[in-house]
Length: 167
Length: 100
Figure 1 (cartoon, each protein chain N blue to C red):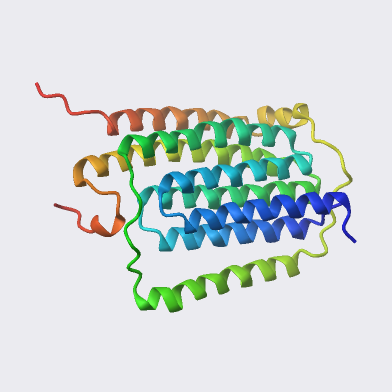
Figure 2 (cartoon, rainbow over the protein chains, first blue to last red; figure 1 turned 30 degrees about the vertical axis):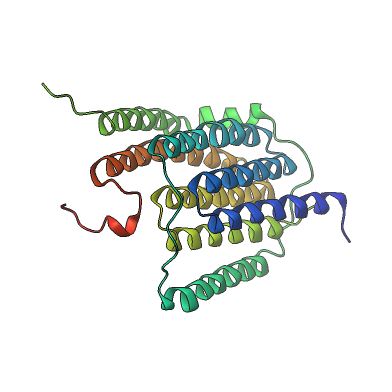
């Protein structure tokens, strides 16, 4: 029986998979970037469907709104063009892609079969207060470490992409 | 309620598609985006398990994965800009030697 929630899930899952397939099939990287944004928005609504409100908001704001915008900036800055005509070797086209598909179907099947017994928790939204009390009490050390990580990444990106100054 | 295995199968399918994109695409930017797709698939699995087990640690870990993905994207894109500046190409098949 298809409850409304399963119906919503199926629509969002179809949108996410369509976006991922479009990422593979598009030739220009800007179209792949926009397809990835579609996947991320679909995943954010799936997080909302599971009651993870904070994670859904962070996904939209940080992942789709900052990281993907950074990707699009770089694509426009480097003037990335379409990929050239495919010259996949015969081995890749007739053995590699089907084997990749077989891997995908097999992993999905076994994961589905192994977790079929898991019952989801009763429907309730997770409050940001509980999540933040966990983040700032038990996991405060990794949290501070991520601030160091962001600082190091910022310095690294700055140093790497700096133009050489001619003295 | 949507069973947990539905979310996990969707996560596995998205991860497999990310692997296929990583292996078969030749533009370095598309390869980076396939890495982000794989990270998103793993985030979905984390949230699904956090819901199934009734614990919040899964969502805390999703938070950390998003932060690490942001840092990795920043440094990785700086490296891509450097490669384009020094080799003139974004095709990974042409960047096949350490020295020019």
